[in-house]
Length: 201
Image (cartoon, rainbow, N blue to C red; front, top):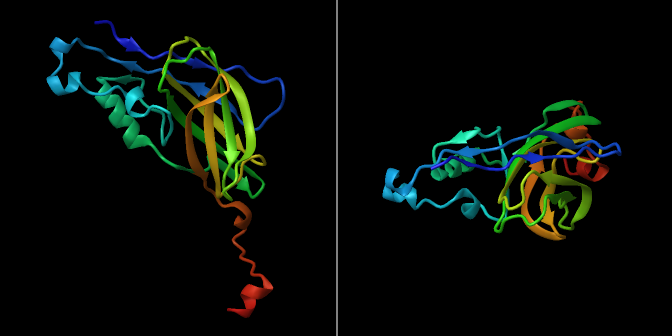
């Protein structure tokens, strides 16, 4: 059986300046084998796109390029997933970047080559749009999309809770929520108390 190759995603840079962008794109290769060559339980193992359908998984590190089986692919995603992202670089309270490695799984194959990536601040319960951009896949019909994105201040900030969505034809097809961590406003190490807090100390 020929190896099953997941389509490589590709991005198109925007003409306008922004502080987040696609850094790198990843494709995944699952080394296939016919049912006769696989054990019974492995042959019946659910595909990662079925296990994680409708989800964006942010991973601690970039996933390997090859997996021995769908089960190995699923296990790697489970082991690497995170919901808190620490800065790649943080010079001071006003300058910082976060690199996100992510992989998205869709319930249905894509019907278009274009998808929309959007970010919202949900720290206080409401949903405030922060940034978004179209991205492009090489092949229609894919159920997996993977890329690296860099987020940066001032649009993004430390200790904020964000929602990330992927839309196709104006419909959300995958999403996740995560926190950005870092030193933030207290970068100097000083802690300031309000008058009310001082009276209670």
